[in-house]
Image 1 (cartoon, rainbow, N blue to C red):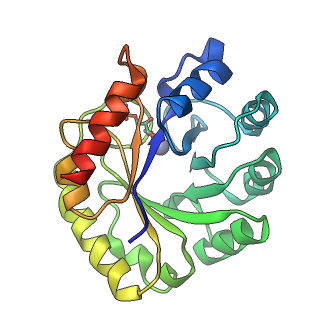
Image 2 (cartoon, rainbow, N blue to C red; image 1 turned 180 degrees about the vertical axis):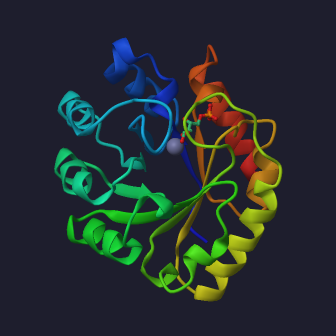
Length: 221
Ligand code: DX5
Ligand code: ZN
């Protein structure tokens, strides 16, 4: 199983000081930067695009940047994010006309590819493509906003995806996104997640390092 990764979601960072705040979350122990892209079409909110990602790279952010696309259509924007410096790009299968083609496009662009499952999205979207994925992202809230409550049913979903990944024999990351924090991360890790996105839990706290430390302790439990 891949070693645990904590990915601060900069959706909850201070957008007026995005570079500094992102660097601060990494210095506090964050491993990846989780970069939420919303288009006011696939989800009812609007965030940031490739220009902002490029600005973070130019600012000196060297950590992996994990792009979570909540956009429709998907394909047109993929090469732009790759060029801007994305490390992984994940998308929602309902937002793509041709899921297998989109995965191929992400790989051709030089990034790792992930598929995102909403709370009500069935696992059979993984059929036939799991062998091509680098990560599966299980949403534990409905996408669109930070600061929502973790949906407990996501634990069953994580266990089921964990089983599918183990059966595949490949080192596919199992990422969880939404309502994750020090209080529930032990149960989430026990359900099989190895990559943990946290926005409000980290950026809403006075001491980012303390939250990230508490999350690591929970994972190790
Ligand atoms: C929600 C985003 C999440 C969000 C999580 O659509 O995909 O990445 O930032 O925020 P928290 O951790 O506050 O639930
Ligand atoms: Zn996200």
